[in-house]
Image (cartoon, rainbow, N blue to C red):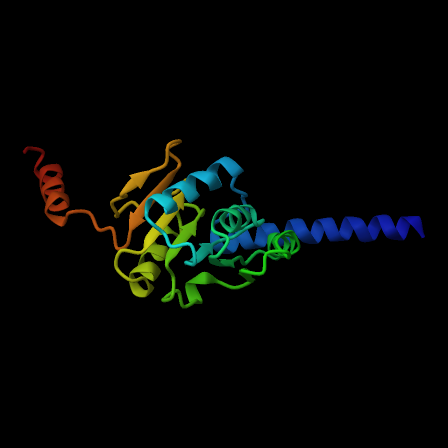
Length: 194
């Protein structure tokens, strides 16, 4: 009987690890957790952006629930909606956040979601999905919506502010850089002279 329990526990651990690996291969993003310090940096940027207390905040790639927990503490009236594809982090975050009635976690691909009611968006992804995420936000967000990206920034966008530790950036969507400056830079790079 004890051997059966050991094998069952081993099978569960292996299934959890396999689900993490499959999701990472599918999305290009490992299930990483933000630290409390990083999450507080995100909160500070959202507060600096003047986010209303009762805002709708989307967390794209909510992982283990660390960021959603800090968002819920910092914005107790906000409606926080997290998306996570990986089953293990999703279920752990569901257990972890079950006492927060204004947090709704969804196990689905946020690229297929409607974010048009977002008052703010938070993400901690990797570089690979960022261009596609930019297109999704272009499609769904109202102009001026605060977007905070942790660690991996939008390369073709201009941040409005950077967190004190330098790992989080605040954008006012669509956050397009001045195109004349970009065109001038491209021309100089092509010709090799100013």
